[in-house]
Image (cartoon, rainbow, N blue to C red; front, side, top):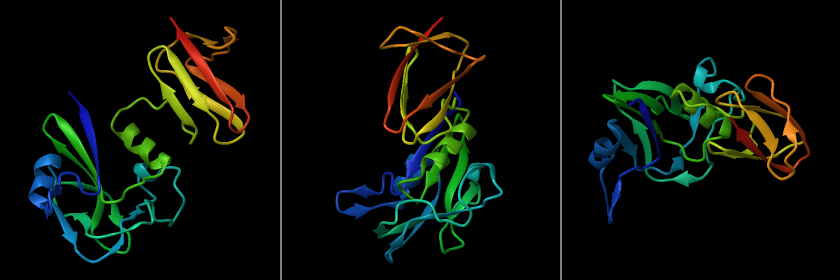
Length: 193
């Protein structure tokens, strides 16, 4: 399989009152280190990389919460995608582990654009490239507009689309649906073969 697992901050670290970097490595397949000093666990992206596509230049990403310890990657076999902000230490990496790939982020609360870029790099189908709330299965699609404007839904296959509440057909161009939506509007679409 070509599975990708995404790990945040301290996966496997806490076991009762004790912390273990070895447990983290066993779980993620990535060698990690930590600093005991408090700090923000944010990432500084290389804005020339595909993982940073669509991101704001120079802005650290991740929650602004102060944490201790702060974790970083200490694994020369991992591909560095971003540094832990304010350091030269790797904070976001990708590492193949045989039949699967591990992605580890020192930061928590990554922005939707970065999460989509990670999913895209993992080979996932990206339904929307906007920050609207979105849910889908093989038959129904729900989108809730975070902002007013045009919304583009990229379908995984050619199909007919109807408004699930009214039964009216929704125009499809190939595998793309474009909707004009007001802020806070919700639409439920039904996908039909």
